[in-house]
Image 1: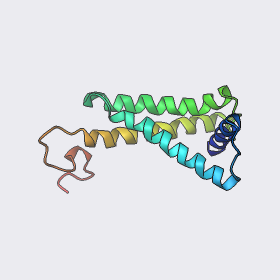
Image 2: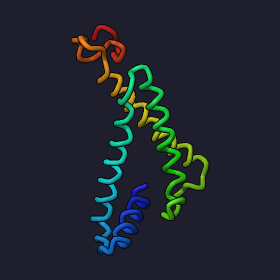
Image 3: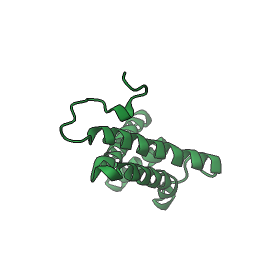
Length: 130
């Protein structure tokens, strides 16, 4: 995905009439853009009503994973390496789904009921009482 990000940034800069930075700097820009985009997407998991946080985590994770496979080709950014293999496609979606579920777990911890003084809800404890 970093290569797709690099292509997207380079294409956008050229279209705007700017010079494309050297490869190492372009890679840093792509990683920063990826972090910002993923942070923005996964922060949406905690928005809304608490009972639906897991549903939002699954939906956003699946949408992001599917988008990572489909959108680069649609935007003319080429294929990601190995994207033709079904195993790689499944792993891509799985990684984004794990991200959505992780965001849901974090969001669930942030959305605990008002007045709860326990900083770590017991439902997240590995061993009750610890």
